Image 1 (cartoon, rainbow, N blue to C red):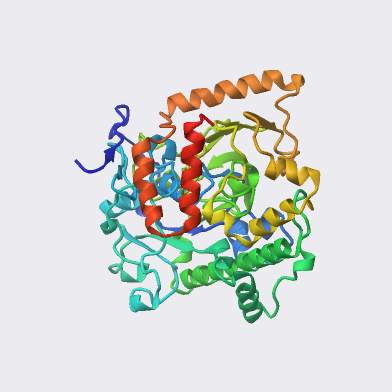
Image 2 (tube, rainbow, N blue to C red):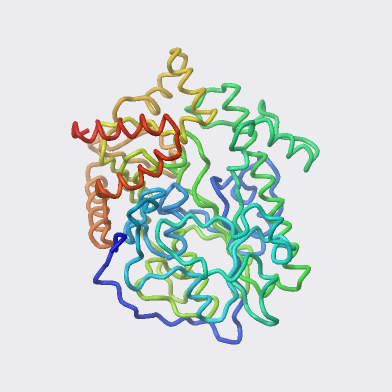
Length: 492
């Protein structure tokens, strides 16, 4: 039989009742943004104005400490759409299961749109702008971004916009926005400022931007960050158009809106890594029954989004779902949140983390490999091209060289993440932290066992996926695959 099936004996098709009354069921609308950190005014950023996301926060509940369970698109989105850790359902390797070998969801796990559809909701995914249903040819990607690392049936979506629903029918809508990816592609750093200037009268001035303290104020890095901030502003404007449309159609106050991003900014130590730059995301909930103007300080994960949505819609939450309804009466906040990074494209890695109120503990399973392993996607980005050039010329500060270009990594990292925003000082070797280190080490071990973390992928799955990458004809990918194989053979 074609495919690999991950069967977990402990998953059962039992459900947990919701507390929402049937007559009070709202529409559900998710806004999910690519490659963007919490760089919005309501999160304390003053770099660019973001009035529309700030409005959502003022009229709803903002979660100050929301984190994704995977800092790269497809594992994060696989977890998001099921309410399950990607490591539990076998979807943790980025863009995996796309070759000859495929991935099936475990028994008892279903994509959330399928649950809503079965309950009578009109399910749709697109950009949230009017006219999509009437003129699908106007949209370059009619069904929006999915990026799930498992086999799924496109029929779980009825269309690309809620305009296609029957009169009076509730809808479940996923608005997918490119976010930080707006600056991707050839000429992106020149194109995006022009878009921003046309939309707002002026683009972000690179000379005014602030970089993480370990990065040099190089012209390319400054331009990249300025273009990213323009993308933040364009994203906020798009959010405003969607919210305005809901209001114009009389739907805003009967729709639960959740705004989040699928991981942090795409940068050298952010996307693909378990530091705050990669895993901390905005998470805002507005709608019926949601406290207005509230700020929650407890730890939440993006896999909580399906449970929140199902509960607010008056539907059953599957008992196997690992996400939680954080608005439930008597809800007990999480004491810890977890994240995992595994293979990204052709680049093999395995990193796990546990975060508590005070500590971030990171375990590197391949410490003999550098942080910036060869990766065709990241190595082609202008910021990393500039950094590698500066490193080769010996023009980087010692701290930058240590953090980014050391040939190896520590097996364990420990940070006081509230005080050390950029995770610059690894405290794992300090004897004063031995007790905390041991406790966090044990907590991560327990999570790995309890959630059935499926760990490294098989050689067969890797080879199957790599054949797809080879067919793309990118020379760097082929060379990187050879490096990964060589390192593995050497036990590195």
